[in-house]
Length: 348
Image (cartoon, rainbow, N blue to C red; front, side):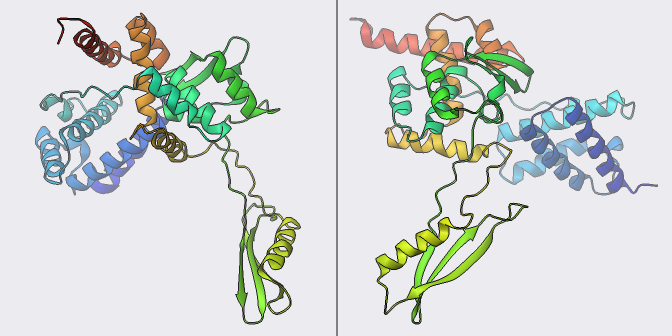
């Protein structure tokens, strides 16, 4: 017989398996798991199936006293609603306590949008082929960063200029332009399968330093079958018979004789790595703080400004609900108002 805490933990595990079957995004599953863990802790020795709306309210109050924002409280309440809806599907709950609570409406902020000139400047300040492809795809497909990171070469149709991506709402087809096509082909070379984005491991230089009467060289070797690195340390020469430059040249030859190159992983780079690439390119371009989500918002707004319907934008962005797309109509109206005020003789 399960104790209440273990029973609640088992319910959470079953809920997480259900989320896996429903193909929820990894980030969403992690968020739900974190919230449910905090909720279980707040319940203590009480069964989750016996919880009332007062228990949910007490949990939200506790989170609010910790400095959680109103949007964060909405996220926690939404997670509990989905959890209790799952319990209702299994016949373990008849009335969701989380559905009996309403929070104050959160006013959605209008996202930052880049101008078309800003986007050109941003892409022009990419330093590597990988970063150029990343910026091109984020802007011309409107994909989420996780969707772009998971793109595989075999899912790209270069003739039709389309990509099959997997997102929150399932699989969908996105499009890209000629400039993005050129950038992708230059980046992938002869590769025809595997993840589009590879991790750009820096060239290993090792370290060379004097110790006593000897020059000591130290570097990482990746020659093991399991790919785990090991530290190699060797005497390069004597300090009284070899200058630093001579020792450096000999040390470089020693590194090349081993396995100094880190093996490519079969997984894409971390999203944090790709996000950092976007941020650095924006700083070089003098655009301040720009994120992959900024480019997603910019993609939608530019389409809308050039006559695309919200229904088309919804499909391209992978929004489950049209309401998610309608925020860009407010952005577009703001753009119209700004244009009127700056261009009309009596608009100021």
